[in-house]
Length: 168
Image 1 (spheres, rainbow, N blue to C red):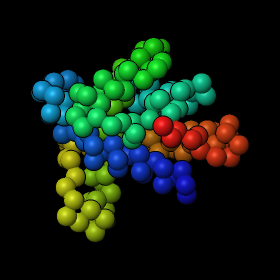
Image 2: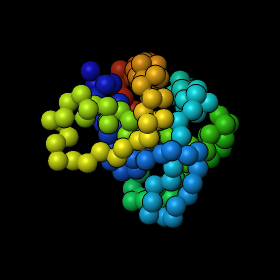
Image 3: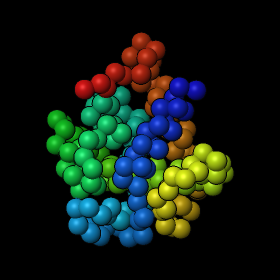
Image 4: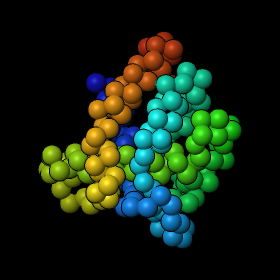
């Protein structure tokens, strides 16, 4: 249950901070706008490889603890964390992929959750994802959730039955 709560918290926090209205692969729109991002199987495969990598720098890879208030600043902050740039590049990813891809997954999860349980988000706007991203999320969500649960369990086993302490 704690893993599901952590996953949901991460997804919701990321969606609220940097949700996406993505419809195109990349279209920077200035520092205050959320750049567009399209979910792909290639991204999810690489994202899953990072989630399953026992050598991943877990605390540096978390997006829910970003302090920046714009997407562009968050991407720069994330990329500047020690080792992130090289680690992500070794998996064929960038900070932009991780921040915006995770935000898009989170926004899709939140949009679906609010559609199923409208009372959960009453009065709180949800960043809408494109129909294409929503369809992608819905066709891949079971696998994504399974990867998150397995990765969380593995991290807890490696950390004496506890989640890593990522406090700054």
